[in-house]
Image (cartoon, rainbow, N blue to C red; front, side, top):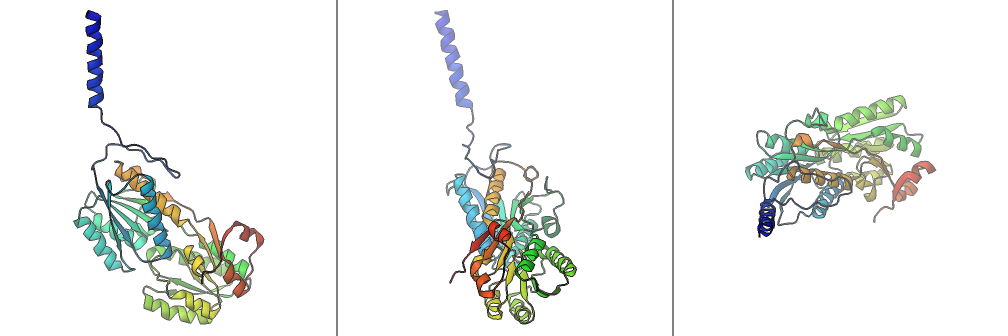
Length: 341
């Protein structure tokens, strides 16, 4: 009887201990990373995210779609997550208003695509507990003031995608060895200024004249681009999301000159060549970082992820139309598009 009593007592204690345990959220497989919680999730559900996209562009649309798809892979459906998506339509003041409203609405996290949106988010979230994840930013140190990318200070981390202007310029010279005058368009955003210096330094060594124009608005772009298309042998734009390029394509097509860009989705639409990071990958990594923060990690525990621009993208239809040449080695490494009608 004594032995039976001891057995029953042990079983009772085990049941009570199991009942007192806290279940952790089930983990989900991840190709690019496997976020781990450094503590309990602070809010149950739904977790609230304010998603600010600076403008309507193929690249930023790609980032957003990949971000949302990746969250679905992690199992963050409507019952666990509430997302307020807003598009600033390329307007910095509107981006600021959007992010300020996110703060007023007390979201848990702001995700901002492009440097202007990231700056607006960071400024709005200052002095609060709201965390910020940026995406599609070329130079987070220069444009956002982040000094320590391994242990980000403040409340912001994200995905950086530096743009190697020299690699794209090398393709431009391979395509047209006689290029003597290059039109350079940029928004004037801090994130674009480093590219301007890269282009000027490269072209100086190759004896190529650079005609640079800062175009902060669509009206400026249409005016300046038309002049550059008439006088230059090619047009160059970086990974500059502050630049509204919607009106640029028909101008370069009418002028019969190639357009080199740091935004790879524009090659599908009719630009000739790009060297770019994978925008889908940018969106996926941003989602992984959001999951880590939602799981309880502090911003300083989530290092800035840097994705090098290694992809080469070429539009074969433009190549044929303009009679441009591409070395076999370069073409072999490239993603080739036919221009969409």
